Amino acid sequence: MQQAKVPVTLITGYLGAGKTTLLNRILTEQHGKKYAVIVNEFGEEGIDNDLVVDADEEIFEMNNGCICCTVRGDLIRIISTLMKRADDFDGMIIETTGLADPAPVVQTFFVDEDVQAKVALDAVVTVVDACHFLDAVDEEHELAEQVAFADIILLNKTDLVDGDKLNAVKAKISSLNRMAKVIETVKSQVPIADVLDRGAFDLSRVLEFEPGLLDEEDDHEHDENIISISLKTDNPIEPEKFSNWIRGFITERGVDVLRTKGILNLSGQENRYVFQGVHMVMDSAWGAPWGGDARSSRLVFIGRNLDEAELRSAFDGCTVAA
Image (cartoon, rainbow, N blue to C red; front, top):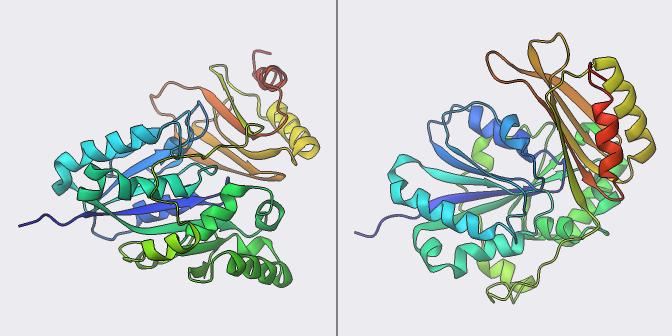
């Protein structure tokens, strides 16, 4: 008897939209199922994997490259390895980097014979940041593609916009994709049944606007002006120094900073300090206790016109030792 294919949910969305928050919600929900999770990050220093909740699921981290191009071969190898013990889980969840074009990722499930034989794309779930979507969608090709490919769209952060802007966002989404189910959310709060095991992916719909999808030739290129800078220090961070620096920097350069995220070892604190930002919107929270883990601080910037030496010097200047 032919073995049933393992369903794969592809979570995509632009930088800071709320993809990891959605993933954490899925992993903490009592749904009685077990998922293998693949997390892809654009930056050299992985942060998202540490932001994913401590769950029973196996989590595979793919750093320093985008799943749609440079580390796409790694995705195929991970899926093939996982399928050797497919009985251990009920499905796969893949979280792409915010800069991922979904087309090459979706293509993987239909042109790689080994992958095609063993897994089935269940749905493309795209998380949209209602606050920043309109500012970026006409400039960032990947963002428009993420919406166009979506079977389900989580219109997230609706609490940060007024009714007029929300309606404008929904109109723009509709112009890009009239078929996707749109669910309005705050902090990616959505019933899990609305995003998993939907059987929603429709290849024929995608081929209508992307007729060359199944051609193996891949001409996808990223905006080379968008870079990722990863900073790390083992010296404790002085909270007041960091607060003064990051607020001043984001206020001055927030237009160029698409995404900021970090896990910091603040002096005198027993818990990790989790810092996140999208342009000039910043957020922070206390994370898990350090316990016996080696303490270090990691901070990642993704954006344009960023000076690594300048950022590294400023970050080092926030340490107690500085």
